[in-house]
Image (tube, rainbow, N blue to C red):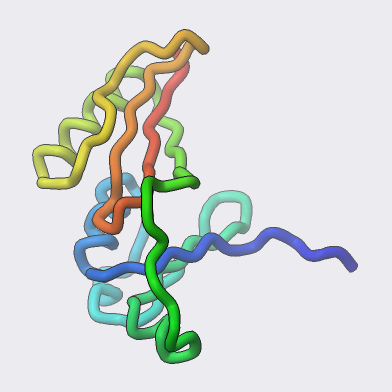
Length: 129
């Protein structure tokens, strides 16, 4: 048997704020999860997305430290159309989340925008033009 890709895990400093960000992008995260040390949801296609508090990670890796510098991996969310990219960008930035690159029409034929989640992870929004 070969390993099967199954889970994307992120370490968060504020579980409630992080889950609020991803709920606003349409992920079905249980309402009572905001105070949990570990939360995961199943995504379409069977892959899971998980969030762990810093304390949870340090419970088994006491020397864990956050990466420095810019994000090297981004999560990308496909939107239905260019107007939806703009709407999510506006909704999230007006809610106080950090926008990195405002929506633009990319040369590769997509409406594209880049945000950062509460822990600085890159999150892209895109739709076909």
